[in-house]
Image (cartoon, rainbow, N blue to C red):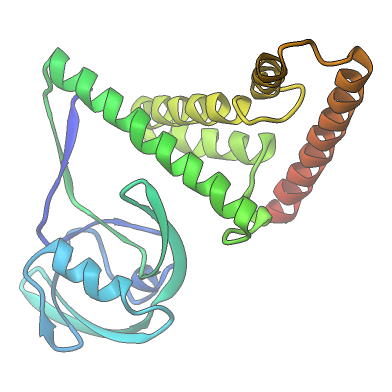
Length: 233
């Protein structure tokens, strides 16, 4: 389908619903000129200013059809993926303009490998943050959330839907390797322990551990379903 190249021009390419930019009347195609009176020339410069201001008022000036508009917005505090990690930043709900170009087979393969690496690192960091308490368990989603996202992505087009399917496949692969009994990662942990002690673990001990793992998975599934229902309501 080609490769999307992101423009560094501070021009609005996407708007997120119910975010400050949309509420202030900004539209796709608007060219942002300044923030708090400070001129911005690139998308990178603009996002650096906005990201540094969480839940703070900023004054934006933008150009549309030769007319200058100004509005004061209050940024939202949110966590977003940045370079394979997750960072808390200020957002107003805009995205850059992109242009899709044709890609060779080699470029496509490299882009595919990079995407798998990027989403894998993001998933690993998300799990780490949940375990350490930096991220809330409420951010977890399950089948109901996946169904809603699938519908949204299907309306955006085949490319968006296929990308989401690939992302889910990567997530499931990594989750399956966690050292939790009943998952493949749990079986690998058993093999590792038996390799270290040089004898099989007692069947009774294995059974008890597997039952505990299954109980944990069932509780997690129930919690995720609850999260999904609360999120919809």
